[in-house]
Length: 223
Image (cartoon, rainbow, N blue to C red; front, side, top):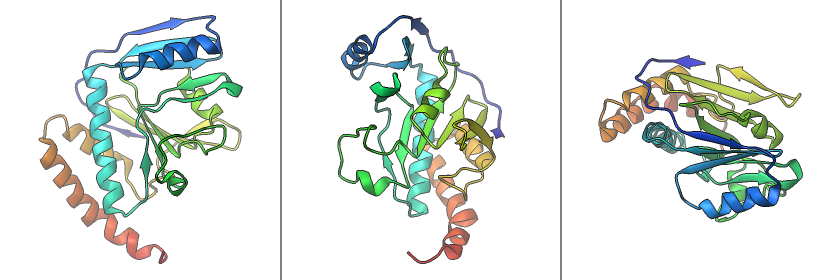
C-alpha cells in the first residue's frame, strides 16, 4: 500500500436501483453507450455513477504511466479500457476504470471482442475510487476471477491479489508488475497533477530506465 497526499476533487454522483433483473440491466448498460455513466450490477442491484473530471484525470494519468512502463520493460499487454465485464451465469457485471490482459495478452491479439464465459478474465483491473461505490465492486471482480485489482483514491494505491479462497488480500507488490515499487508509482501519479504531461512521462521514463529496467531485464531469463 502506497500513500501520498493531494487535494481531493469533487465526488461523483451515484444512484442505486434495486430489484433489477438481468434483461433490464442489459438494456440500461447497452443503451447508455459511451456516455459518462458507469453501470455496476450485482445480483439484482444496479448502481449508476457519473464520472467526475477528477476521476477521469486520475485514470488518464495512470494509463499513461502504465503504457510507458510496459514499453520500457518490453511487456506484452492488451488494454480494453472500460469494457463491460459481465456474466449472466454469475448475475454480475461492472465496467472497470481500466482492464488489461498481460499474462494472457497473446490470446487477445487482434481481437475486438471478449467473451468472459470462454476467455480468461483481465489480469489487472484499475479502480479509481474518488468516492466509494455503494455496491461491492471488489466482490464482483472476485466472482469474475480477476487475479489483481489496483485501487486508487487520490492518496493511497492499494494492490489487491485474489487468494485461493476467492478473497482479495492487500499486498505491497504487484503480481502483474512485480518489479514496480508501488510507492514510486503513486508519487508519479501525484506529480501529474502539477507537472506538464510531456515532462511527467519523460521523467517517469528516465526513472524506469535507470532504476528498474536495466536490472530487471539483466536478471530475467532469455525469451
